[in-house]
Image (cartoon, rainbow, N blue to C red; front, side, top):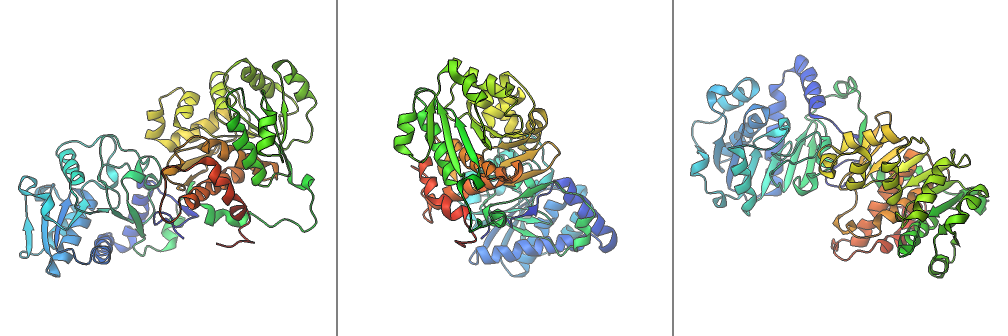
Amino acid sequence: MKRHGLDTGVALYTSSQVRDIEADFGQEEGTYALMEAAGSAVYQELKIRWPHARRILILSGKGNNGGDGYVVARLAAEERKKVTLCNFCPRERLKGDALTAFKKLPRSGLQYSLWEQIEVGEFDLIIDALLGTGIKGPVRAPFDEVIRLVNLSSVPVLSVDVPSGLEADTGNVFNLAIQADYTVTFIGHKRGLYTGDSANYRGDVRLFNLNIPTQFYQKHQFNVFAENWRSLKYKLKPRDPVSHKGNYGHCKIIGGANGMLGAAVLASGAAAKSGSGLTSAWLQNGSVGLVSRQPEIMALDVAKEDISINLEAINSVNSLVVGPGLGRGDWAQTWMQKVSESDKLKSCAKVYDADALNWLAENPNFDGRRVLTPHPGEAGRLLGISSLAVNQDRFTSSHAIAQKYGGICVLKGSGTVVSDANGLQVVCPVGNPGMASGGMGDILAGIIGGLLAQGYSLMDAALLGVCIHGEAADRVAGIKNQHRGMLASELLQHLPDLLNPLQNSD
């Protein structure tokens, strides 16, 4: 199954990488054939998705995006559809392939109109070929008014390559962008289509590679990929028939300060459900409440003055999840200081979440053996910037955190970005709006901690954790997409199936 039309386990591209591939191909084969192929692909998708659309408005800008729109206009007019072309680039400014496409437009059967003459609501379909992949920053006049009125209409929109106003490299929308029902993109999936603001604008997405041979892609190196549970589940090998709990590690949760026990309950339950051989928790004063909810967890209340003693006595812990319900009081501050100083924990795989990340922002240190799971607000504090700045370029922000603090950064949000310090980045376009509720981050931290306890690498645990988490939420929502009212604890029931895919194939 594909998510948002995205084949999983594939490279994601910047707009400059796509241009380089296109240019390399063009040197040998010419580039106008690509424009014809792109326009033809859009037109064929138009006929499939909207077979009864007769009155079609095509909004064309300059450059290749506008040229693709001209090809669509010609093909539609040739089949006697009622086509109106609103061209925002004067003919005298056209050049290259776009000019060639413009010259091929028919002299009759096609209406040319100025924007001021357009009544958007009179059309069955709008083709957005305005701005393409080149935009960076806010949309300006006259396009801002055009986009605003298109979005206010009830007319469906098909966007060419990317919705106009959406940054192809980051997924950021500075002020406004076309809210497309469908996006037809070319040559390679643009990485901005799957993170940041993009989910509000892209609609369904379909890629056409325009028959560019593989060797033109192989000339370029890529370090950004897209994954989901279906592309990663091969990593979840069956357990050996002869096993005991010691084979699958010990995950310890540190959190659950007074008044925040629920976070530790969720995290420890997720770690246990994810397959940790043993799961335990150090809490401020909630062990009875946790065990009554989840008797499989070994829970202990640890007073502030006993933290050092317990850390000194620690042994056989394979992963540590610090932060769920930790709080920011003296008890939490002492825990964080002692964990960061502990020689025994230097080689232990760790997950820092919630208030552990807030402490880290105030007490920066480097540790290559941990997974950091910030949402944009926490990421902003880690980097000393605003959450808005984080989301304006989630790729740069996630990588910067991994470089500054070590290990793996899981920058949560729509299109979670997982990064290591060396530049490898994976986008996980998983989950749904129902996950915007309390406790979801605790579940994710617990899943990652449980996988780390079983010996998965930091990167594999982070990626599997994110994708299993999102897939579980999709299963809770079901085919009816029941997002409102989703509870974090409901994800737990789906973890066994998702963690044992070879035994329970989908």
